[in-house]
Image (tube, rainbow, N blue to C red):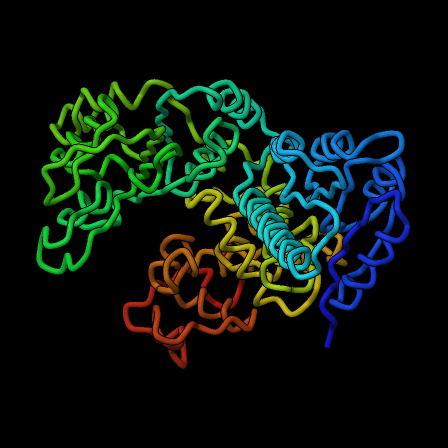
Length: 486
């Protein structure tokens, strides 16, 4: 069982007796203690100590005084909390220290219980700050926008231009292309990044609940409203609201969203009170909104309000060069989140995936990668480990030439891959597959037997006839006597 890490405290005081007394108090309480006698020594210790949690800092020091050390310390990223100590404290000095970021301020002589209480509170706040920072890093890593394709580089340039503004954005793209990730990238590079990012899937919320979800409701507003509930716009005050699949929102709700955009006002369901909110709205859709407007499904005035800056999320088939990068990214995330062992993909497997059309886009690729990591026993994932549908379409049914000794084996392997792919494509229906590949059904059965291909149970024709040549009405031809049928 691993021991909990000892929290580290640096005591900075030019009086050795003060340092010794504090060391005894804190070591008895289980903390790891470091010491420094002046400002320069303190800054050196701070820079050289990994995971320093707290600094007790005297104001009167030789050379750099405590306030100068504090100001310098707060310039560093992830700086520890600081408690100031003074033998000649004044209100002005305490206020100055607080302005510079000190957690607390003590006058000498120090009182043991009060110091320990303040130290525990400071360390608790430091832990919370570190946890928030780690969580933010994990979230940012999980929602990274990955890609070196020119279309992705152009998208990044647009994001960096518009993120610092409050402009409303409409993101267009097919399902699974990463529209939410684009919205999060805009938010994280905006002046609102320290406030909430609130996502709403407009297609997933029933029509009778969408207004309550967006704007909140008061107690008793409708059956089941047993208490007051804030809406998404209220929760995102000073932050960003991401309205995904906005093309599925009803016209009634669209009118209320328009009011938020124009006036910055919301009205809870069941309330007559108007409330002000300050939110940035980013919307996304996979629909043609101009067509939706023509058909009367989407408000034209809302479209113009949302479409201030349009962004386009490219389909994966249009940026296939990024597939290896995305595979590495998904593997890294899955391994870290699930404490899983690292696995790698062979060039042959990646080559097959590069040739697949990926109708489900990046989401489909992510799901395939995660499934392969879970289901493949070996640490190296090769082409034969891929799903049959992916192998069939991707590699044009050709085997790896480096693994084939002669022409006959190459031909047999290619033919087997071709048949498997076409069977998968036709849901293992033998008659339909035979018609598609232009060969008699009896000949296809022979090929299945030749290559040891078993019909999937419950799909297609469940079993081959005992004598293909005797099929009634069989699709016989001069080539159906066991030859290749080519």
